[in-house]
Amino acid sequence: MYNTEEYIDLIKRNLSPYRFHHSMCVAEKARELAKKYGVDEEKAYVAGVLHDITKEMPNDEQIRLIEKNGHSLTYYEKNNHRVFHQMSGEAYVKNVLKIDDEDILSGIRYHTTGRENMTLFEMIIYLADFTSADRSYPDVEIMREKTDKSLLEGMLYSLKYTICDVVSNERTLHPDTLSCYNYVINKMKG
Image 1 (tube, rainbow, N blue to C red):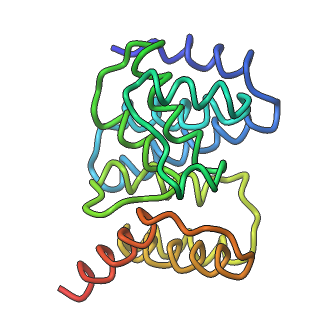
Image 2: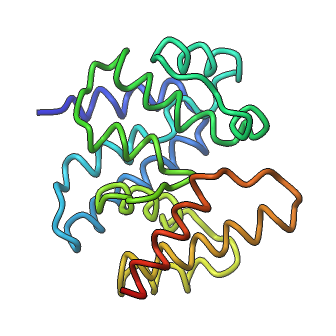
């Protein structure tokens, strides 16, 4: 159904060895989480392979891809280039690779910020990126444990970690991340 080997070859040619390795680790973790939580494993793997496809592109090229896809950057996005790649990645996968699967596109689109009303698939890609085998930041083992126990627990822990990191480094917090946090905390409280 998907040209997975072609996508792997594409990212191998276009990403640094570090980013290629990370993408493959995320793909493996996405497939593992998809199997555990009952979503399409092949789609999760493909989204993991492609999630950072534009991460190392120059910012101006990413902005062109985003605008060509019919979107414009908000104030918060313009002031946080770290989120460009989720938007440009979605645009690249949709318009260049011609993948029109909404799960894959939205999984890539929200893998950095999250969003309110995240789907199970989106949470899997988000958490696969956070907990892949190549990750070694403080608390990653706790995050892996929480993610294996419950996607919502993994999301809550990862969002608290992200929000604290952004605030302590005095960076702009994307509104989607705050909305995602509020959504997850309210969902957990019932």
